[in-house]
Structure formats: C-alpha cells, structure tokens
Amino acid sequence: MFSRAIRRLPMGKSWPVGTGSSSNSNHVVSSRLFSTGAVRQADFSHVVIGGGVVGLAISRALTQRTPSVLLLERHLTPGTETSSRNSEVIHAGIYYGADTLKTRLCIRGKDLLYDYCAAWDVPHRNTGKWIVAQNEAQREALEGVYRHCADTLGGRVPVRWVGEDEMQRREPDVRAETGCLESPSTGIVDSHSLMVTLLGHFEGAGGTFSPGSSVTAIRPLGGSGGAPGAGGWEVTARDVRSGEESSISAETIVNAAGLGSCVVNNMIVPAGQHRKMYYAKGNYFSYTASRPRVGTLIYPAPEPGHGGLGTHLTMDMGGRVKFGPDVEWVDSADDLAVNGSRMAAATEEIKRYLPGIDVTALAPDYAGIRPKLAAGQAVMGGKGFNDFVIRKEEGYEGWVNLLGIESPGLTSSLAIGEMVEGLFYK
Image (cartoon, rainbow, N blue to C red; front, side, top):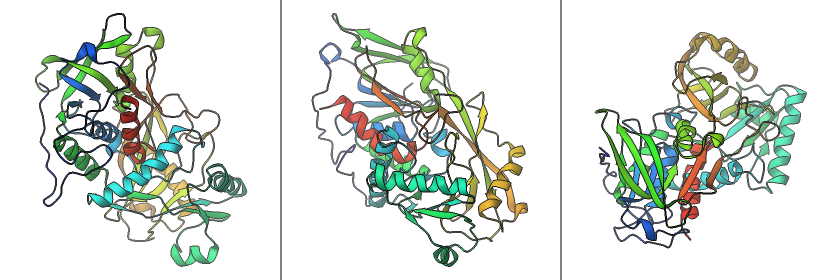
C-alpha cells in the first residue's frame, strides 16, 4: 500500500531552483503557520489528496520546504480526469473579476507556466486567441471584455482589436461580422507532458507518489485543547488493486481532489456543512479535413451567465484541430461518453465563425467534466459566478481545502501551488 512510482527527468536535465522545487537534497525547512509540536512523529509532513495537475503542482511546491510529502491518487496514473480531458489552453485571464482568485491565479500562473515549459522542454506554443462577434450584442460583449482588460485589470492582460484587413491576411477563413478581439498571450500546452514533468520534479525532490490509493476516511486528531487537526491527521486509503486498506498520519492535509473534492470535504466536516458538486460535461469534436486551415485559437464572444466559453476552435501541439467544449449538465463524474447527439448544435455554432467547415469531417472525440459548485454556474463574472475556493478551513488546524477548481485551473496550477505553499509557511 502507498506504493511509490519512479519518474526520471530527460537526460541532461537537472532539478530546477525556485518556487516549488529543490536543486538538491538539502531541503529548507521553514517555520509553518501552525503548531506541529504534537505531531512530530507523523509519517508525513504533508499529504496531498488528488494527483491531477493542481495536486502535482502543490506537491512539487511543498517539496521545496520538506521532502516529507505524500501525494495520493485514486487512479493508477496521474491526471486522468479533468486535467487530461480539457482544451489544453493556457488562458490569459480576461474573463473574471479583478478581485477574484481566478483572475489573480490565472495571470500569475500563465507567466509561471510559460517559464516552466520553456525551462523544462514541455511542449507548448503561444498561439494567441481571437474572440469573434457576429452581431451587435456580441460586439457589445467584446467591448466589455476590452474595457475590463484595459481599465479594470489595468492592462495586466493585453488585448487588441484586429481589423478586417489583418483578419483577411492572417485567418481568411474566419468570420467576425461585427468585431474581433485578440488575446496575444493565450497559448496551448501538452498537459500530459506537463504532468509527467511535475511528477518527476516532485519525486526527484524526495516526495512520494502513491497511485491507486482511494481515500476512504480522514480523521482530524486533537491536540491538548487545540482545534481538530492540531494533533495531526489520520488518512485511510484503499488500494484499488488489492482492496487492502491502510492508514498513515500527517501533520497537514491538502484536499486537491478535483471532481472528488466535495467527497473529501464531506469526510471531515459535519453533515450541516457538506458541499455538493455539480458536473458540467464538455463534449469535444475532432476535425480531419485539411481545410479550412487556422493557426489561431478561435472563441465566440462570451455570453454572461453561460456555463462555458462557447464551442471554440483549439488545436493540439501536432496542429490537430478540435472543437469544444459545449456545456451538458450531467449527474455523474463518470459520464465521460461523448454525446454525439449534441454535435448538430455544436456544428451550427462553429459555422457562425468558420463558415467553410466541412461538416462531414467532424466526429465525436472525447469528453471531460468540469467540477462546479453550483448548478448552471456562470463562467464570467456576475450572477451565478463562483470563484475558486482555496483556503485554510476555519475551525481546523493544518487543512487547506480546494473546491471548484475548474478552468482556468490548468493555467493557474503553478500559481495555486505557490499559494498553498504560502498558506502553510511564512
């Protein structure tokens, strides 16, 4: 139980120096923002639950402070849920309120991610993104995005208008009847390579990865007169292969379980404080024709109150075009079969900005689930918007809780790791 998987870096690479990493085995042990006197004999200093890209980034960041970090993942490989079933876009941070975690962590995470990918040969590309409007209502939405970036965000997220002549020169097959706004800092990343590299850095710094470990119980241990968790935490997990259960102790825990984060949360808090997860399924569609050829990400103008950013055009590092995701509310996080019946509606949306598309070359591809904290939750600010939840839970010691980590979670992952490290250490 709690087996350890070994990952190695490519030949010629050394361990990075900087936030969330260590250049050698002499780890810096800094003072924590909580007492650990009662739990000095714990098996691990930190246990991180959830081996998606966010859990990996957090684990990597914590190993800068101590190698005594255990990462638990219920699947046999890391990042098999939301982290690998998404658009793989490096977002700019243009859609959310200035004071939200989504904006702050997306902007910071974007910069960290570009630097990390460049330093460690993680495949990525700064493609840029066009947001296109087809009517006056969408034009008004674009102008709102421009004002938000230029004024509210103080220019921290660059955007620029693209004129008709430039559009015709760069992307002649794309239609934007009433306006086109470019986000030049948007890009794409190979999420699988990113996660392999993060795992390699985490284990190379002394961290322990335990795949196939499904957490079944969490018990906060009381200290002498302290809050729950003041004496540490007992975490029980089941080996998904053998069915065997075993327990370990930890000074602190991090809930980064993504789609399962509410389940983990509810193992700890009283019934009256339980949270419910809502599942927004996104269907993706592949495209096999060589025309029209597009080299920029294309997004329809955002619709306030909508649960997604529209069926957009993205591509992978090999240049393969894909469309999606749409928004389909489902009852289960395991509902990952592509709903082919939704392709007709997606096709109509695509044809608005790419009229020359060969509809016979579209086919259902894959689906992913976005963890939402409310039914019908909006992506943009305003009514129905929910921010990331990343906090030390009140009334407990040594527990950092992450809930509702959806888009832009991939982009924000390194910044989230940096933030969680800061919550634990001075």
